[in-house]
Length: 70
Image (tube, rainbow, N blue to C red; front, side, top):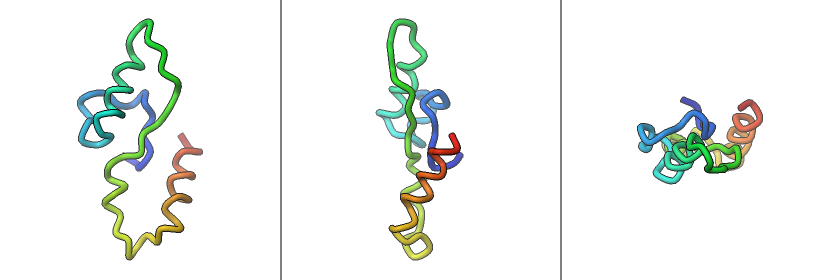
């Protein structure tokens, strides 16, 4: 899994990866009659990036590239 995950890819089984809010939005987006705008989650694994290898200035660039690709 990358650092950016579309709501259409998540459900409650992936709460450890995307957090509770993300997982619940993924679940809601599948219910008939519930309107959830298209969106994405930043995976919890992004917090595991070691700061020494990923300067803070490049982290937003990495996320922006993944968002654009999804």
